[in-house]
Figure 1: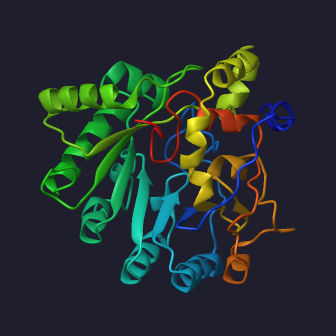
Figure 2 (figure 1 turned 90 degrees about the horizontal axis):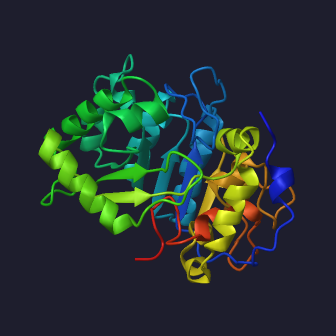
Length: 319
């Protein structure tokens, strides 16, 4: 796989600083039941990296000590971690909101029969990958049969009250473009999704998040192989909007990898770009270090979060 950091690290992206830490985004490991082209983590069924018990316990200690509001669980497929459910239960007991970045098809993997019911019982917020409302586009991006399983999973979540207007069980969907293009306008695409999924499958959900593909890991390597890397970077830079800087997720979030190492965001984590303020930043450092006001590590991939309407783990930054 082609390395992308050498093409990104010499950058003119503006300096930005941290605000108060509100979200701990934890990557529980890179094992996944899917292998998607756009995956910036390069996750897949053969990956073995998984967070150990000591770091799971440390996550809980940090949540409690710093009174962090949100635990954002990602992977890979975070649900494949043996302590996923234990971590969720204990975080919820602390009053922490838990987000599960779910690929939907995980519900049909061995030993996951009760996963949807567990998430509903714990009132976990679901952020689910759903790159289109048509079978052709979804299966092209994520593999044969993924669309049908995703629809079945969404219907199951709906049966449990997820995505309903009168329910506290939140179900948000995520759209990624299929190639080196900017995502369409979020609000308009959300209306298309809601109409088509409701008419065709009776599915309801709360919000659609549109995310730009990051020119790193598997997607970045594919761009290099196809001779499209520099063209995509030119597109991101040409559509840079400084109004997106204020809402960047890295300002109020820390990304934790499966070994407990800290980065400003999940994308920096995959580029091995640690938090700059600490020599070897580790999860335990948060117990004694205040990061407010520190500079955030930036490179050219940051234009992916600031192009057009902006892009973050919570979707577009500008209405």
